[in-house]
Length: 262
Image 1 (cartoon, rainbow, N blue to C red):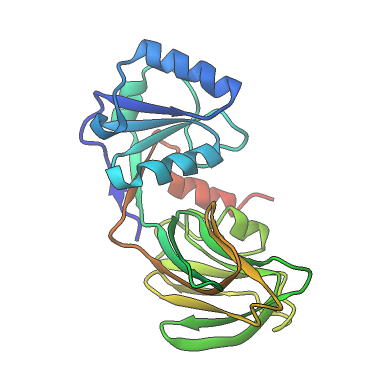
Image 2: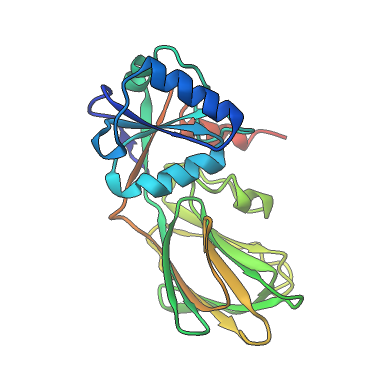
């Protein structure tokens, strides 16, 4: 379950800006108006950009265990607050937070190399040739799907359920639901398999069938591994990320609201 979190202090900030003109201008406004420090010494990390930049900042600062307050200077801004340089410290002090646990991917390539990476949104597998992928799926050591023929498959968190998962017709998951979404991409066999909702502590293994003939790549958010033969995924309860949202703009409410949009 995603639990509330609050910053202990909001006296010092570290600012990360996306590589875009609007974000650069906002960076100058914020750093001229407020005292900044290094991420290691900051009370709160401020991200200026869009959702993609916010994900990058979350990955870069995950080990610091600092609250992150994002302000939108991109397109959608699902994970961010509205941009304003005014009353920033007061806004952060009053903000409500949500604590997220990312997924951890361990992918083995055909050469035997191991890639380990966290995923805040999803771990995804997809075919990397003209031929459909063939993937076996185990859940907690039980073979649940001997052969999925598809373009790809993903395991998404509640926070990531409105992203790639939703575009592949996967379910939107409330942030406090203790489940993960297993969602296929263009499944061919089983023909009408729509995926599954799994307990948040489930451990999955994806085994690539015919990896030489039907190569598959894997990614934890943007961290990729090419030509994999095995991908293990589970929720990393030892790692926590605290996201801050202005009052009345919680991530929980945004995800619920997303289910009523046409």
